[in-house]
Structures are given as C-alpha cells and as structure tokens.
Image (cartoon, rainbow, N blue to C red):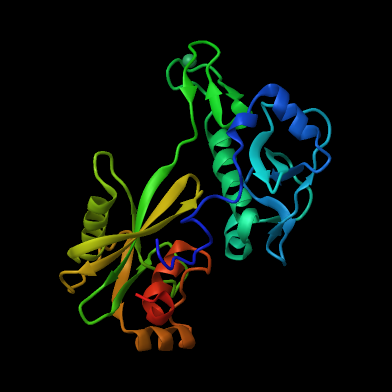
Length: 293
Ligand SMILES: [Zn+2]
C-alpha cells in the first residue's frame, strides 16, 4: 500500500523465517552458533527486557537445543533467534509497551515470539483424539504421536476501520472496558463465512449504527493478543446518526481535525499508542498532507 508508514508490514519481512532450516540437524547447529540469541518470556507472556527503554534483552543460548521447549523464530541479518517460555526472576516488560517502542527486525521478533509462544501455551492436546501433541519444525507445527494429526499456529482475523463522513470528520469510539477518555476506531472479529469487507459493514453497524458506503483496504498488522491479525480499512460513512450498542461500545462521536486536536490537548481524549494500526489509521486522516492522498 502507498504511504503506509507503519513499520514495514506492507513489505517483505526483515526476520527471515528460514523455513529450510527447520530440521533437527540444522536447528541444533543454529542453536550452537555463538551469535545465537534466545528471547525469554514468562508464563504470563511478559518479556525479559528493559522496562524503561521498552526493549527486549535476549540472552545467549546455552545447553542443548530442545525442540519441545525452544522455538526457532528465524534469522535476523544472519543471527539465529530462538524463543522460550520460562520462569523469569529478572525485570520483565509487557508486549504492549514493547510494540510502542520497538522497530525494525526487533519488532518482528517480538510479534513472532508472542504469537508462537501464546499458541504453545494454550494448546497442546490433539483436537482429533485428545492425546498430547509434540512440537516439530522448530516449534512452527505440532503433531499427534497417536493419530498423526498436524496442527499449525492459529491466527484470528479482525478488521479495524477508520470511518470518515462527507464533512471529513472521523468516528471515534470508547469501549466500556478501556481507561476513561481512551478513544479509537472500531474493530471486530471476522465471522466464519464472511469476507473482511463484509465484516467491516456488519461490525460498524452493530457497534455504532453507522451504515458504510465503501471500504478500502489499507494494510495489516500482527496483533498477538493473544492470536489476532488486524486488517485495516478506511471507510466512507453513508449515514451519520450514531447509535452505540451500549455493551462493547459505550460512547462514540464524530470529530473534526480541530475538535480532535483540542480534545487531545485538553486530555479529554486519549488516542491509541504509536505503532498500532489504529494510530496509523487515525494519523492518515489527521495529517492528510503527510499521507499524500
Ligand atoms: Zn491425535
């Protein structure tokens, strides 16, 4: 997508998944590489890192490679990266804090670590026969030793939509579970049997009462909370009368650029964190010159 400044989610990945290296022999060699790095995450999903700097602190790989514990993430400029869930007695950082700060290959290491380790922490039993499955291919698949059922990491798609009306205002909404004053664009999970675009029309109508006229794909971002991907759209509103669902969304309003700037300045509206696709969609409307539409 043109002018999408959000990391390089619209281009080739920086972290090379090195699929051809996912054999027992190669993985053991990569683990033994003196440059190899291990990203440690605790059982709550917190990363070993520097809380102030908002950065992860990978450690050296030691001992034997264990495919049932260590996940091979890929190669970053030739350096092998692994991840593990473990008990940590060092300072830890929450992933949301990291995503707002991390850049480049480190950002891809973080999202990949979270997505893959969340999967291993939540699932381990065969969905076909119930037996405990085993990790294969460097942790990017699991196989059942009893019935050979193969399982791959699950990703749940969700759409996220900035809605703009004919007066060039944006619709922002507040969810009941959020901190006071936190506003964002609307989002919702794709339901089985619907397209991304249809999901936009349905979710926006359900949550805000707004009918859309058209939706345009903008880009996507991995969102491992715990296993989503956000598919971003910009939509044109066909109607402007707001009727929130009162359950998920408790308040929504149209903002001009000036109104939003004043509300942010006054602290009555808090926007999504920098680095999120929500913030990128809002910025695209807020700073049209920078987006060069
Ligand atoms: Zn099975």
